[in-house]
Length: 383
Ligand code: UDP
Image 1: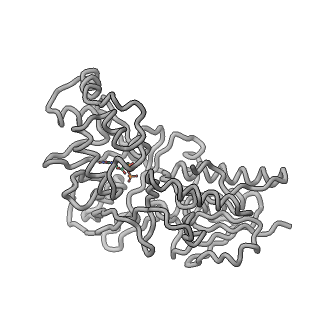
Image 2: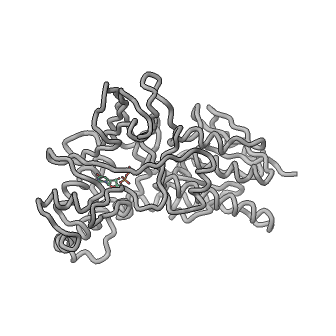
Image 3: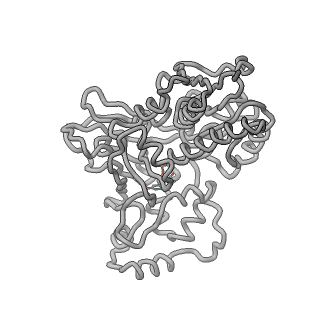
């Protein structure tokens, strides 16, 4: 007779694992300290305008992985959507990610793709052989002028520190293109769920073997009641922060409604340091198939996450890796618990990666169980 499985957190990580185990006849309890499911992907219609609002900031679904795409499409009607981001810099509007239009507009040129490639190569600092930091990566591959215009100010605002203290991996998220393709993502599949993300997670959790309890904190004294726990809360929070706090950024959203079209696109970045917010999102543009006369916008501000705030982005500052290492070592000593997802593994994860890892984690658990093997504290490399 199996004991129950406890899953802490009703975001994508927790919901997907819950569903995969429920399908295998495990009885799964999912708890969440918030009063709603779907974690930071939660979306709901604004009462006044009926616009679908991404309550915790914009989420655009994109992936190269067919299994993940099929999984999500099984739980929603996915609508065609292409993320096209604009940036306001020095009184002009540019196209992102950096593409041929951006390069030509910025340098006031009419370069062909080959000419633009040569131009940008000539701007890159070739003395940087193995870029490790965000700044080195930018200076090496786009050069000082584009770095300072588009990345430096935005990144200082977003991360609260100099790009020389951040890993290159953050910038590697963004492509540089030598054609006029302004699709923000390189992935094969991209879309937006017709009714937002909350019904997707509700559908994933909708199984006779899954029970969900909201407004419920994890109680460590209940650990022995469960055969296994999957924990998607903050890794340092699990240990009561007793070695210190891992750094997170939190976001503040200044929500406003506008009678009409406010900015004409979903995302407008403000890359200059002097402007205190990083971007403005106009949420009706995330559902371009809908028609709304009024608009709901978020001015987005980033700041260091304090104890009372919602953690969004794990910083993974270069200087903080030894503290992370200590928490990972501590977590590896724990038994019958697996740390999952963005907060549980302290990594900056997109939704598709979160889902894929959750599918793989559930599969590992099921297989290990069959083979009589223990489930490790981490099913992924969190280092
Ligand atoms: N970034 C920037 N300027 C921009 C957009 C992005 O400097 O106009 C940097 C910034 O450091 C950001 C990173 O690139 O954190 C990754 O951008 P992405 O759009 O993936 O951020 P997200 O939407 O996940 O916040």
